[in-house]
Image 1 (cartoon, rainbow, N blue to C red):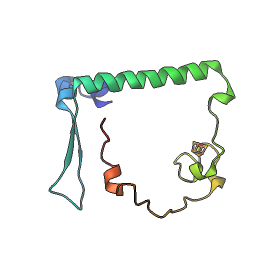
Image 2 (spheres, rainbow, N blue to C red):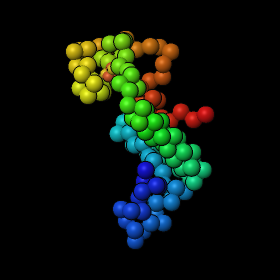
Image 3 (cartoon, protein in one colour):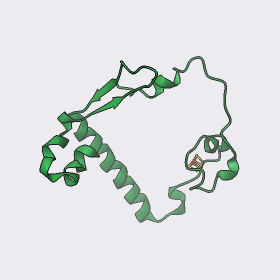
Image 4 (cartoon, rainbow, N blue to C red):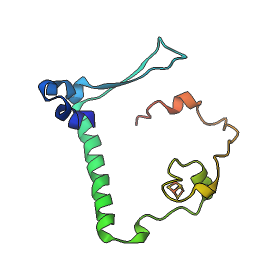
Amino acid sequence: MLAQGGAALLPEAAEAFAPDRLSFTYWYAADPDQPRVIAYDAAAHRRNWAELEGMVAEIDRLMAAGTADAWPLTDDLAECRRCAYQALTGRLSAGEAVLEAPDEDEPPLDEWLEPQWG
Ligand code: SF4
């Protein structure tokens, strides 16, 4: 979004928002000397923007269809307990998130924050 619209926020420095000049840095307090920097570039931006436009077009298509079935709620309340949108979809009654024992096959939480490429 910064690459696409950043220049509107700061037109006098529009070139600062060129995709090749942007990066994202994860900085962990527990590992302050090892920031994880994710570079960005024009090719990645074209792919991301095309994906976002596709999503918006799909939302527009579903909205234009005007069917309530376009946005079905899951029948799996376990999903709702983990979902941040409970209040928005009327699923607060699904209850609080239930803590689960960690799956030993899954990476530690801090690895979940790392981007998965490829
Ligand atoms: S609470 Fe989340 S998972 Fe459950 S129906 Fe709503 S959006 Fe879907």
